[in-house]
Image 1 (tube, rainbow, N blue to C red):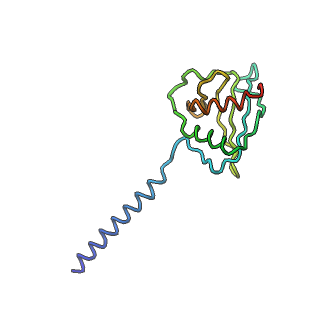
Image 2: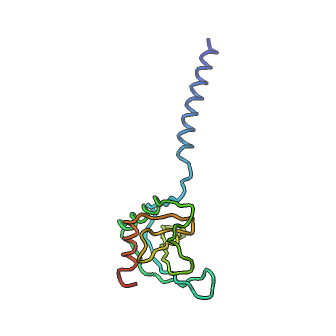
Image 3: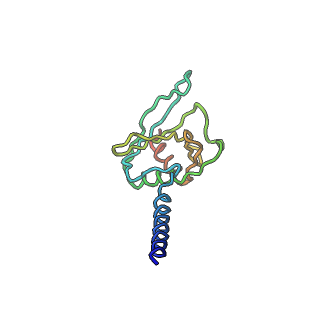
Length: 151
């Protein structure tokens, strides 16, 4: 009689442990291209201009620093949901003017992405981690931030 109780106890314990492991390990999956927007404090938008005669060398200047949480969260949400393509769809032009969004976090090292966009771009693309295309609405907002002052 005690043997049957022990088996039921062990079976119940195994089932509970299995359920616990599924919930615990299920929430630990690595999600590609995710940014913790809750620690984001500001965005610096820089213009990168190639230095002629040198490979991969750029002169940078800060165009603006954005601290408006509404704009920051919109840009971050767009980056989080950016569509990855296996190759460039013609948006990235090597050794030409492009812009970089630098994300500044609290107490964390800087994380930056090269964001390729110009006045005629329909969708901005992040190119240094693959080819991730932002949505058209956010691209228009970024272009406004970049070019509204004649920059």
